[in-house]
Structures are given as C-alpha cells and as structure tokens.
Length: 212
Image (tube, rainbow, N blue to C red):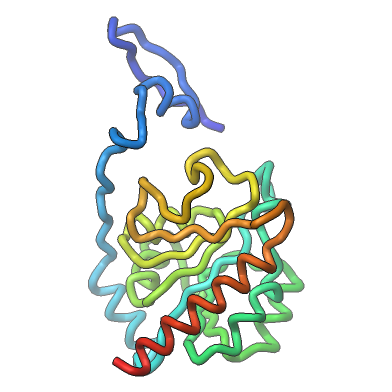
C-alpha cells in the first residue's frame, strides 16, 4: 500500500499508510468529512446515453471482480455467473467490468441481456460518464464502488463477512458515501444469500418504477 506523508501537530513530517491516516487524524464517525461529489463530463454522458438507447427500463451497472493482484481478491471477487439470480429481472444490465476473466467473457458472450461496452472505456472519466447514465450500480468491493459513491449514484456493494475497515461492521449504509447500501455476507463465503437479498430489493425497485 503506498505511503502518504502528513504532519503532526508539532509540524514534524510523518509517514502514514492510507489505513493509518484516519487514526493519525483521529477521525471518528461524527467527524468524517462530508463527501465531495464528482461530476462526470456532460458530453461523455450524452454520448453514452445515445449508445444505450431508450431508457424504458431500469439501468443497472455490474462489477463482479477487482484487481487479481489485490491481496484479498479471492475473497471479495465473484464469478459473473453468481449474479445470475438477478439477471432474469426486467432491467437493462450494463457491464462496467474491465479485464473480465476468460470464464466471465464466455458468460457475457452467451448472455445478450448484459450490455457490454467496456471495450470503449478508456479511463475512469469514461467509466464515470457511463455510471452517470445508470439508475443503480451493483459492485463488489472495488474501485468502481468508490467511484459510483463519489458520483452520488445509487450503489449496492457486495461485502465479505469480514470486510475492509472502511465499511465498518453491523450496518448497511456508509458514512463515506450516503448513496451506498451494503449487502454483507451473513457468514464467511456466503455471497449467495447476499445476492438473493439483492434480487428481492431489485425486484421491488423495478416494480416501483413500473407503477410510477
């Protein structure tokens, strides 16, 4: 983890990791700074909307795996097929997954209900603009979840039973990102139960949109 320099109250230059900075600054739940909301490029948002076509159904972005070099990736990432319980719902699913693994690429190729425009995601500016066209992002604990949260987009995050410290414990919201909901494993390794809860919530959201 890259280190960051800060200064203590005496002005001395100190070396902290990202994880240690909240401790160094004595950050508590009631002193977390308010989020600074990012704004995607309007031109790029317009271009993505044009490519996505009619907005007649809920648009849901999907991210199911992170960087395989991450030390906890085997626990936080899932195969795309694990999301199959939600893919039969009446929504437009949009892949936000860069560098999909071979098995996931094969699943994408066999499931045309998932729109995959990721070949044209050149950088996070493109990703931010595409996220700006979506009604909801569903993601494992990876960078796109943080990006969507910083953009103020409704985002559901799949979390391991023992998650990264930033997600805290025993809560389904995030003090860092007000638009995030957390779907935690009820027991170690049990993503299936969390995904089933997501399906129930997503079906209800689709029904509300249909009747509005």
